[in-house]
Image (cartoon, rainbow, N blue to C red; front, side, top):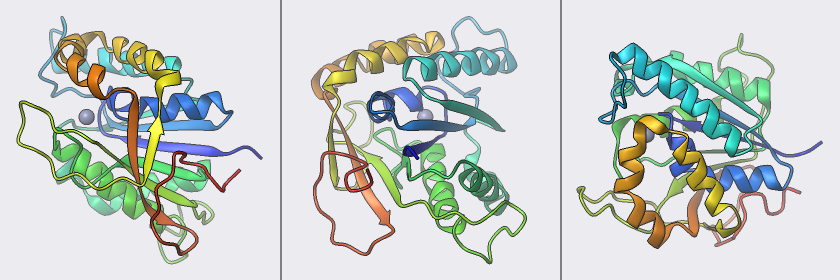
Length: 242
Ligand SMILES: [Zn+2]
């Protein structure tokens, strides 16, 4: 059986600008990939030509699909939470929806944001980190969510992190990385995926310099692993699993 990677994000475009390198590299090596996005991004600053929040949400759902296609994502799904409101959701119910998906999909590796919320410290990103962390552990525990499918223990959980601060924002407090991922082979595809988010074109323009400077790598931190071990620096999310 081939390896499976699951990526949990908050907004359409997170999958490409934050995780696009890891997703495209995984696809290239035959790893099946599944991206779950919790909101349709209706609260975005950049709104394209959308006349209403609903219209923007619809547009961003389509952009998310197009971006996932460029990244070679095997399955993608967008849930129905409100953009900007994840800190107010019922934690247990929302984590339960992720538990159900982990048990059904059976990923070897899960990737998501860290507790810092990424370089832009978005509270939705922090909440995705916390919900996914809970779901990662609870999916393998018999006492949790008895009606959400057969238990499944994912082998590894990684948080995405960064080696830079955004120039125009209060600095995040990022996690030290344990994986330095060379994404030069898929760098163009990552940018091409970002271009699918037509409504977010001003964001792509604004972050262009950052990606030119730092875009050859993505950084991840191993935060949970099936085997007890010391943290060590690697260059591959799947080493030892193949
Ligand atoms: Zn986001």
